[in-house]
Length: 89
Image (tube, rainbow, N blue to C red; front, side):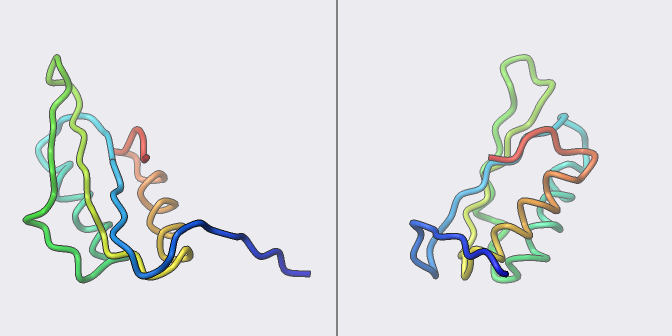
């Protein structure tokens, strides 16, 4: 028996993903590499980065061209399992 999930999204669509982690030198590059694995057409120049108030953390927003729910699920799984990532929204 396979369970089908329903989604309110219509694909393809622009989908923003916010990734937060410690503000270390290669955090943005790591995020970019994971995003490009799942969304090879992502333009790195569109990444938005914002440090936390005290500068300890960095929030990165990547708006990807989502083609399916499976693509987004795989991206979320890989990103949230990375040791440098604290939160994925």
